[in-house]
Amino acid sequence: MMMTMLQPQSPPSALRNRPRRIRLWLPAAVLLLLLLAVSGVLASSPNARVAPDSYEGVAVNGSQASALVGADVNDLFVYVYHAATTTWAIIPFQVDEVDASGYYTTTDQIPTFDANDEIAFMVSDLGDQAPAWAWLLTSDRLTLPRVEVKVADPANPANAAYAYIVRSQDALALAPADYVAYSTVDKTFDTSDYLAGLSPLAPGSSGWHPGLEKLRIKKYTPTPQDILDRTHIRIGIRPRILGICFPAQYLCEEQLAQYLPPDFDLEPTKDGPVRIVGGGPVTPTLFYRSSLYVSSSLDLSALASDPNVCSITYMRVTFDLRDPNQSAFAPATYYDSAGSTDPVNGSPPGAAITGAPRSWVQYSGSQGSVVILDSLTATGGTRAHYYRDNSTAGTCTEGADPGSSGSYGESGTEITNPTGMLGIVFAGVIQPPTAGPIGAPIRSNLDNPLQKTASTQYLCSVADIDGNHHVDVTGDIVPAANAWSCSSGDACYVAAADTNHDGTVDIDDVQLVSACFGWALP
Image 1 (tube, rainbow, N blue to C red):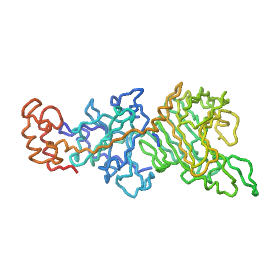
Image 2 (cartoon, rainbow, N blue to C red; image 1 turned 90 degrees about the horizontal axis):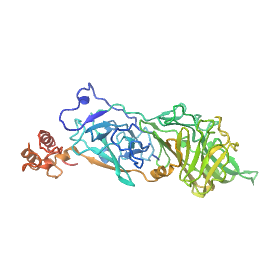
Image 3 (cartoon, rainbow, N blue to C red; image 1 turned 30 degrees about the horizontal axis):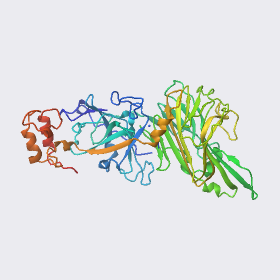
Image 4 (tube, rainbow, N blue to C red; image 1 turned 135 degrees about the vertical axis):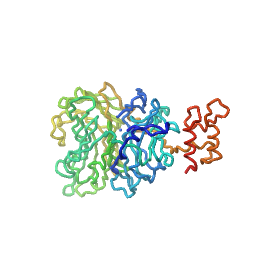
């Protein structure tokens, strides 16, 4: 996946010797966040957000890279530049098609790259900024633009790195690494860092429930085990029987199927090399190599209008571990944004962990850590934090896995007397085993997205010696020819004619200016 820059004039051996064009086929498309690290390009630092160990992903849409709109999606590639070796390397990427309503799709009515479509890649793969004259040696480099994408930490703009979206019909493209994989058979999301799973049953069937029911942290142990009981959804209702309203009863996740929208099962639309995507602008599903983000919405009006329901008393969404002693996660510890800490062992904490909803919670154990960023909102109602660490079985079925009965560090948000539209968000980031809270910066990253600046670039702009956005004889070719063989410090040297900034106006510079004759900035 390597190519070299414009200088020297002969094409690299990878292009020169290939027997045929190699094309990368990208299937047309399926909120946080999601490492083939490029050695020596991004500097690792405990305080650097744009770094080789970053878990975050980047997505650039057509409205941000308008010069690429209308391109065949098979002619788009993402490269990074290595300043130390002055070489280019392709990185894993994908083109996700998005319809006019903002939903990921595989049947976009516009087959080419359009303003809604997205190009996704990983922060960990980014490289250096390329000089304006350093380009891939493609046959169409003089006519087609590239888009430079600068990715920066909004809190520290100097912490930045770059990628280049290249449009070409002959750019070398070998199959990049595949960071994620989705199995339609058992509904699992598999990466090098974790495996997460939905209920394998058909939506609406007996025993099916919405949300996750499996999580293995794979990165830090050779023998990962499922640490998750499931993500729970609970609704309390006051039933109406013969016109009489009775005390509140639970509706467990298995009992909610009849009230859920068709897309609540969270199954994705597309499995790409960088991320697995699904959903739409309000309820996206995104699975990256080290992070996941799932969301959905639920209109309570259908349940509230049921003649057998007097009122909805509460709604709760939680994340519940299996018994850490059964899942080899012990010793496990719970942390949260309010400073609460509790050993997760099935015994209630000494002091109740209540109060306002937490902006993050964290579970750390022998196999690794997972930082949970959940959110439950409603049009009306009162929100509060929920926490339960008690091995005593609750009121709902907890699943058949060993250690599933009861609650082990179960936490989330509950709303009393909820009304209107519910918004449900669950995000998780996989981190190493740790003794202490690490959730604050991860929450900050979610609330403060990386800055993306997309700039259209043309190779022939460096041949525009007089800067009038047009390469002609009088203003460009003649000055370059007159400066031929002149070096920095010579009276005849013209810096603008030294297109590759090597200190001498030589044949490479003159040939480029001549080849660009007639070019004008679009």
